[in-house]
Image (cartoon, rainbow, N blue to C red; front, side, top):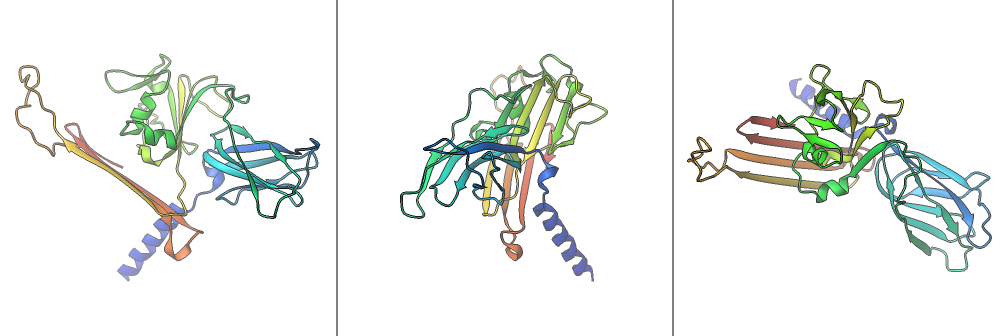
Length: 303
C-alpha cells in the first residue's frame, strides 16, 4: 500500500509539471492582415497557423487576424489558402504583453502544389504599442550571456543598480519599491520587499524590466517591475548541464585572512535542466525539471 501511495504521488507531480494553462502565464499576441499580392485586396478565410503549436486563426472579411495567448519566443507563421501559394514567415518574435505585427501578401498559385514561399520577419525599430520604459531579454539572449544566475541577468539591464549589500535599485528608487512577478504571480516578500523565490536563468523564457509609466494592471509599485516568464515544457527531449568548482587564492595574506589554504571544493556550482514528453502520453503531456546547487563561504543555495 505504501508503494502505491508513492507511485500516485509521482504521477501527480509529473502531471503537475506537464500541465500549464496558457492564460496562467504572461503571453503576447500576433496580429496582421492578408492581402492579394497582385491586386492588394484583402483576403478573407485565410488559415494562419504557428508552426509547432496548435495556435492559429482565420482572417475575417477585411483580411485581418489575431492570435492570442502566445508564449514568448521566436516562431514561424504560415498562411495558406486554396488558389494561393503557401507563405511562411520565420523569425517572428513574440514578447510579453506586446503585439507583433505580421502581414502577408499571397501570390496566386502558378506553381506545383506544395511549394512554399519563405520570408524572414524583421523586428521593427519602434514598438508602437509600447507606452512604458521597458526592456526584455529572451531565452536565446540569456544563453549567450556570461551569467550564472538570474540576478546577474537583471544587473545588466539599463537603469538597474546593485549596491554594496547586493540589493537592487531601479532608477534611484529604494530596493523595497520593486515588484517581482513570475508567470504573472507576485513573489515579492511583503516584509523586506525583495524577491522571495529564486529562479534559475536556464528556466527563464523572457525577462522583462519596466522602469517607468506602469500600466493599471500593476499595483503597489513605486520604482520598477521585474517580470519573469518561465519556459514551457517541450515535446522533444533536451538536457543541459554546467558545473564548476574552485577557491580563492592570493599572495596578499596581509589583506585577505584565511587564504593560505587552497581547497578546490570550497566553492562549487551545479546547474542542470531536463525537458521532454512523457513516454506514456507522448505529444500530450510533457515536463520541465530544473535544479541548481551553489555553495560558497556564505552558504548553500538549492532551487
